[in-house]
Amino acid sequence: MNRPTSGARGNRLVEALSWVALGWAAAGGAMAWTLDGASLGVGLAQQRWHEHTGTGNLPVSESGQGPVLAWGLQGQAGTLAGATLRWQLSGQGQQWASDYTGFKQYPDGSTQPWQQSNDWRSAQAMAQLEAAWPMRPGWQLLLSGAVQTQTQRRDLRQYREHMRQHNALAGVGLQWQATPQWRWRVQALEPLSGASGARLSAPSLGFDADIQARMSMRSLELAWQPEASSPKPSRSEWVLRWQEQRTQWGASTEVNAYVFPGAQQQQRTLTLGWVQRW
Image (cartoon, rainbow, N blue to C red; front, side):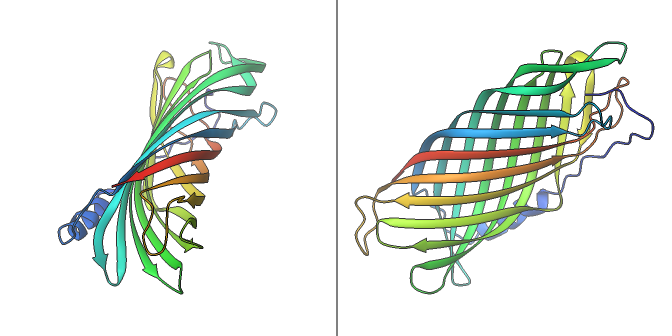
């Protein structure tokens, strides 16, 4: 958090998620929703953060890694235009110490170079609806829509930041059932235009402002069903999942002589999870 320099401008929070929810509700009215399974996983996350200070000589960067606890519920929602519709609710929580390199700021606005260890906490949840079209034997084309929400708490010792973010996403993917036991899947999700937004607060500074946020995701999964045999699927499976999430945070308006200058965040997560079906 910096005191503003000349020409600093804020960005307004954009909210355009309602049409996604209405579309899902309209499709759901003619579908048969079922709950097929639940998942639980643990893993490791690695994060890098770069803040755009606007000063040039005082760059801010932060990196760290720590444990992840992930959960999920999944099922089917019928068929539509030859595609099988699947739904998923998922979430994960994270906490770790990160190495901060930047500056220390004093009440009069002066700064000095500074290094320290910060505390990061993050929680996110996502609702996703996916249409899977069969292609050549064993292959499926995936089209997805998702709504994601996330909170992050960043303890900078000087003060604490609380970020709240929401995104509407759409994407494409491929799934390959290589054998009855092994399945491979890749997916990319991008934000829908104007459908992301966030809010940043630092209570001890009296700061609370809207910022823009643009988040994209890439994921790769490898699943093993030890008891599967064609054409009967297994009731349980192990899933190894790699995910990369990139977020671009926009600058804030001026509040109490402070401004958030914007930042880039990159997070990679590797989880090993167990899925049980009924």
